[in-house]
Image (cartoon, rainbow, N blue to C red; front, side, top):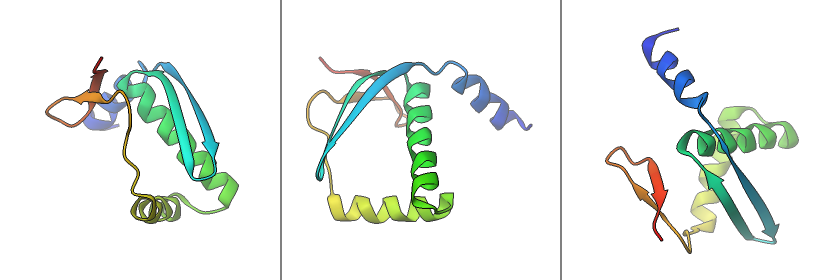
Length: 94
């Protein structure tokens, strides 16, 4: 593996947390507590689940989610994470 993949693997091995996702029509509710690596792993797991359930490949899923993002135009409401300079969340504002 190259250095970047080694660093990514090390980062992801520290993933932890738990989230709950509820959907009621077009309104999702997500709650929980995750570190940055846990958030990436949970997001990736949901993308892979969608890939299996909907029968597409990963690129098709990404295109579908980009389209969904344009249609839905959701905004986060409630406690929002602070952002580091690199755009990755660190902790939640209280």
